[in-house]
Length: 339
Image (cartoon, rainbow, N blue to C red; front, side, top):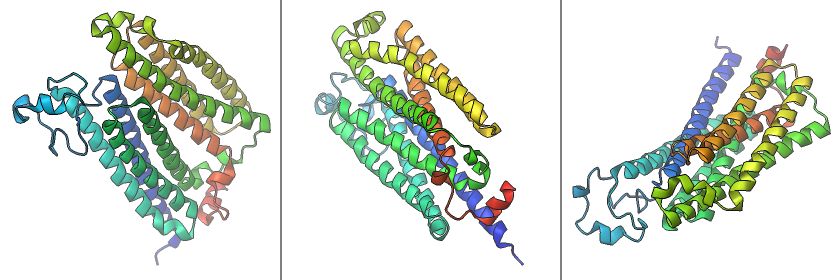
């Protein structure tokens, strides 16, 4: 006779693995987007959804129409010489976007059987699917508006919401593993500090996109030959962003110190250590950019660490709010595992 509890466990494990794979892919997509931004490849494909009018981008100039410079000169912002590296960086970013969309849809389909057990898994998966669909459309508008800064900021903001939705689904589906971690009690002040840290970190990330916009203006004004002067020509946004990083670091250190005192969970403790290491790495890459003339590869790493940071904060926040991650009726196998 087949044990129904084992079937539930296997189904849940498969769903958890799919949700984890989807989260990883979305993070890779964000990293790819950072590489696109850092290398100036946003218009590597000047049209959408095709690239130079082709579903598979060209690899050399001879594959383009003779008058391609005339056709795409306005959108390429003066860079009328075909650059296959930038074109394929942007194209790979688009492919990762499509793969992420398929995985989010697969997660949604896989969440349907949980409707009678925990509807939150379905609604969280549906939210992720709708958000990533909206963000895909927004990506097309980024190209159509020729990298308008407000569109790029919205694009990143929606990507963060997709991450939050998927992390919610992943953590909630892992109820048996987080059961003991979710029983920790926090004071209202400590919960408020955790929420404040999340909000200010998110503000710091969005301000960073404004600094990147200011950097673009500087590059256009003084050119690549003056790379060592880029940072000194930035406006107030850079200095606020740089100074506020110390506030963010201080908040994290205070938060982690307080949380370590009230939690006995080894898993939460490891998450807190990972969080402080990510924050330190985030600040370190910021210092590298400020003092080493903004190396291209430091920019995507800086953004990637920022999204890791905010995602990890969200997971820790959920772990201390059991009503979010625990179903009203805890499955028997989770209750037994707790014991």
